[in-house]
Every structure is written in C-alpha cells, then in structure tokens.
Amino acid sequence: MMKLSIAAGLALMALTTVSHAAGDIAEGEKAFKKCAACHAVGPDAKNKVGPVLNGIVGRPIASIADFKYSPAMTEFGAGKVWDEANLTGYLADPKGFIPKNKMAFVGLKKEEELKGVIAYLAQYNADGSKK
Image 1 (cartoon, rainbow, N blue to C red):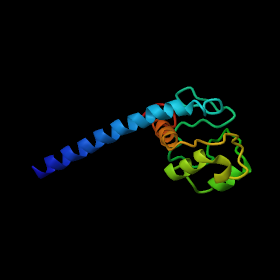
Image 2 (cartoon, helix red, strand yellow; image 1 turned 120 degrees about the horizontal axis):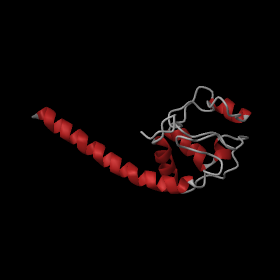
Image 3 (cartoon, rainbow, N blue to C red; image 1 turned 90 degrees about the horizontal axis):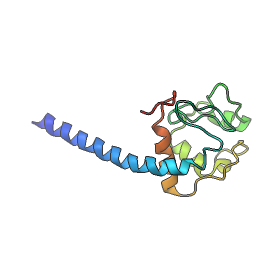
C-alpha cells in the first residue's frame, strides 16, 4: 500500500510539473520569435547568424562543430554547459554575462519570457525532435 501511495504521489507531481511546463513552453514559443531571426530549432534547423539551439539545455557551451563562435564565447564556455543558470544569465544580458561575445540581442528582460524560452528550448533533442 505504501509503494502505491508513493507511486501515486510521484505521478501527481509529474503531471503537475508537465502542466506547469506547458504554460512556460507556450510563453517561450512566443518569446522565441525574438530569437528566430538568428537561431533555429526543430528537425530541419540550420545555423544562421547564431547556432542551432536544438539540445542546448545541458549541451557544452560553444560546441556546435560547424559554427564559428567568438573567442569570448569559446573562452567562457571551456568546461561549462548550458544549464538553467548559464542560460538565464546569458539570455537576460548577453553582453554583460559574456563580454565581447557576438550576439547583438540586448536580452530578455521579463522573467516569464526567460523561463519560457528555456522551457521551450528544453523540449528539443539534439536532432531537433521533441522529447
């Protein structure tokens, strides 16, 4: 009985997390339109002015082989991954977080957009398929 209660509790938590993330993903998809001029996601995504963002959450920084990163990005990214903290800092203030990087975007200033874009990007595997 105890195992059943624990399993039911975990399932409820998972459903709650998924429904909350779905709201964030919808917000993130809207906010990502600000990024889409320079970045792409999805199965047919290709590098543009910025690198493809498929699988970015958890990916080593500056690791897309066929993209030419700035020296600042390469130096900053040595041994680091795009986790929530790094993505939040960078997306909020790209030039402040990594001075001298090439990204011209001024940043996402609204917290719900930051969280939403990260949730939106997190749904993509490295091959562009959705998780």
